[in-house]
Image (cartoon, rainbow, N blue to C red):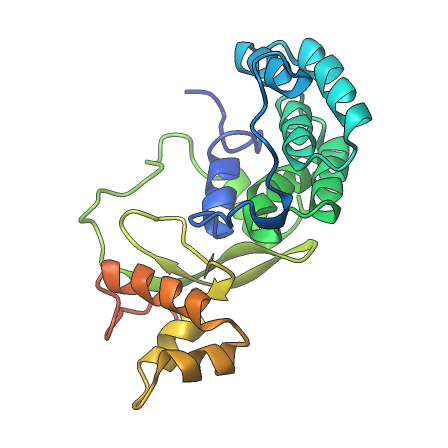
Length: 236
């Protein structure tokens, strides 16, 4: 088996993306564009990318961005090209450009996290040390029924930094989920267990829209996390 943990390019990146709350991607919203035609530079770039021809993909993406510098799909595809080439800094630059053009942080957390990891900007942080030194013969995921849901502390992306925060760990998400649609799950879970909690009150306390809170609550209910949860970390 390849050294997926020590190189920070295999399971660690997958784990980081999952931990960062990449379960729910925000809709395209304001930055949605017309579908690329089969003859457009963006469409050709995607085809080159799918074949692993990253040089040709970059050429087509330059043409696409010359025509529309604020094309979010083109910026994000260029970021993915840089990530495949293990170029963290230019990938970060493209993600930041996509965000300025209208991409949401929720939908680009996984790309930003991978770009930062490739730059080894957090190589000495305790949580990355643990992942880097993970034994290669250890299973990546536990069996689906191996453990009940719990709360644990994991590395997540907060703004431009990676910090340890409480996440919800379930059988289908063993690396933990931090947010759903922008709503942090652990604070929501604790507030929802209080008496007289309503979606409107929860939204007010968490500074979120009621529809966002409803989506996060639905995610928790679907996994049987309301009204109780086994906690691996003590609740305040």
